[in-house]
Image 1 (cartoon, rainbow, N blue to C red):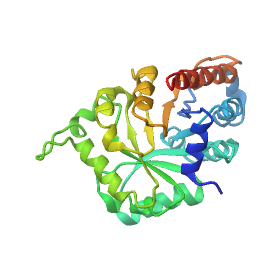
Image 2: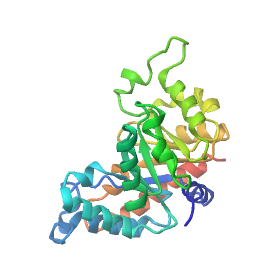
Image 3: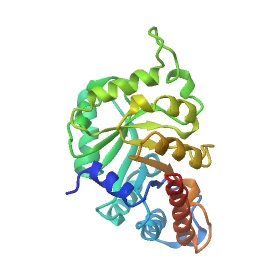
Image 4: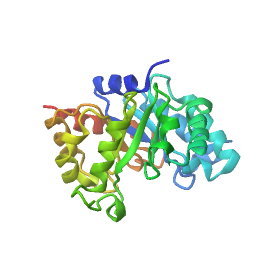
Length: 270
C-alpha cells in the first residue's frame, strides 16, 4: 500500500494541488439526485468519477456524514469505496483527546475506514496526538493557524517569549515529526502570516483551506509558496467545486473548475 506522503508528492509532481472537499449537504445537491437510494453517495460518486484525474486529494468533512447517523456512515463508506487507491483521502474531524480516546479515534480512521490522513487539534498536547503519530505510513495535518475569524481568539495570541501561539505550535509539530508523517493546516486567509513563517514551516506538508468562499486568493497564495521553494501542499476547495453547477451537468462542471484551479496553481510556478 502506498505511503500517504508519497501519494501527496506524486499528486504534486503531476501538477495536481487542489484537494476536493466533499462537504456534501443533502440540501444543496442537484434535485434530480433525490430519487436515488443514497443521494449523497451518488452525488459523491459522480463528482469523484469526473475529478479523479485532476484531484490531488479528497477531504471528507465527517460532520456532513455523522449528522445522518448510521445512514451517513453508509454514505461515508460508499464514498470511500469510490475513490481510487492512489489518491490521498483526508478525514476532516479535527480530533485530539486524551490518550485512550485518541487511540480509538486513530483506530477508527486508519484501521477501519482506512483514511490516509486526518486533521488533528493539538490543544491538549502531544499525548492527545501520539496514537495518530504512531501510524508512520499516514499523514497527520495538525492545526496551526486556521482560516476562520475566530482564529484570532487563541492562535494569534502572543506568548511571554514574544511568539504567537501558532508559531509555537509549528515548532512543536516539527519536534513531533519523528516519523516524517506530520503536516500543518494553515488558512489561506492568513497570507501575510504564512509568508512570514515559511522559514518555520520548512518541509512540512501544508493543507490550506480558505480559498474561494472564505476569501483567500489562490494566485497570491501559490506565488508565495513557490517563491519560497515550498512545493508540497494541498489547497482545499469544497463548495467552489462540488456546487459549481446545480443541474445534470454538476459533475462535468466540477471537473472543469478543478482543472481551471490547477492551471492557476501551475501558472504560479513560472
